[in-house]
Amino acid sequence: MKSKVNWLEWGKDAFEKAQKEDKPILLDLTAVWCHWCHVMDSTSYSDDDIAKIINEDFVPVKVYIDKRPDIRERYNMGGFPSTVFLDSEGRIIAGETYVPPERFKLMLESINKRKNH
Image (cartoon, rainbow, N blue to C red; front, side, top):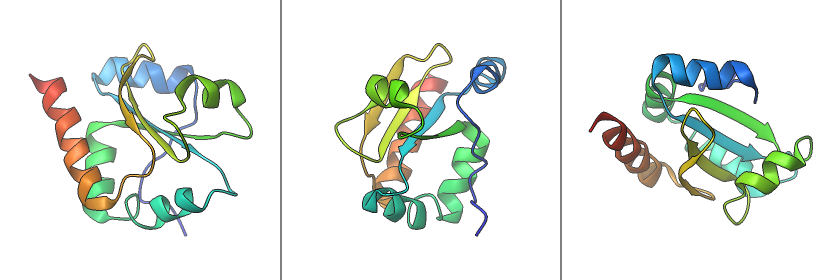
């Protein structure tokens, strides 16, 4: 099944896009073996409204933690998945682990309000 979120890979292009478009990065630290990562993919990231907000207002980046332990160590929010919002310089704005859809929508709106004020 194709993801509803237009995930980018970790790298210079994602950070340049965030800077150019003045959007925060939504970093999803995930793993194939992680139960709650799959739950987040099948609930929060599969929600049409959430995916639309992410694709329009954020630069979404998905990182598999087994492939990038350096990023896992730097941005781990205490477990996996780690849901981390970054500025275009890679500084943490906010973060959590698993976020259910209702709360995730509120979190996205809150991060957007911060950026727009």
